Amino acid sequence: MNDEDIKRIIEDNYDDAKADSLRSMVKAFYGKKMRWMAVNIWIWFAVFLFPLIFSVVKFFGAEQTKDQIMYAAIFVCCIVFMGTLKVLGWVMLSKHLIGREIKRLELRIAELTEVVKSR
Image 1 (tube, rainbow, N blue to C red):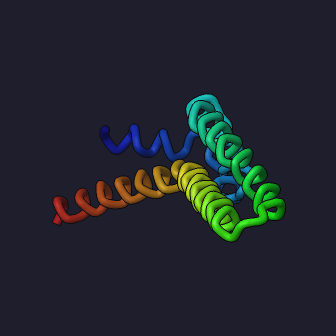
Image 2: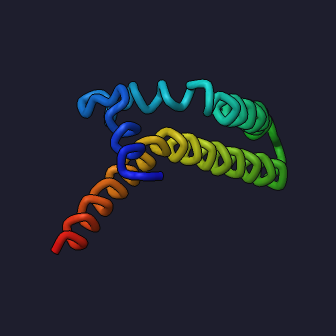
Image 3: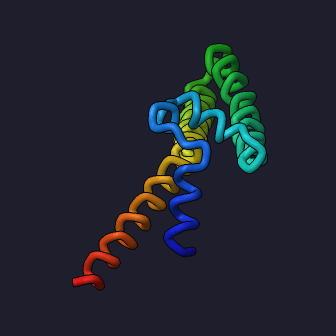
């Protein structure tokens, strides 16, 4: 990738005010490229939501301590997995922002290389 390609990528439909907003990050996450990841995250979120609700209902209905501990452990595991999915979703949201910053750094390094070569 040469300098002109990097400049064109950065300058194409790029607005600094909109690039770092949460709305643009969410729009990129639910865009065509990342739709499969969003659907995957929501499916797994639903997969862990049902056992979570089930374990809460059963926890309060259980009479033995052993059963309460089992349902509490299921609840905690589901919460941990759902939290992990949220973190994964946030990482995917910020993916494009990080890529754009890397492209800016590549452009700066290319400019710096030209300055060093000219000396």
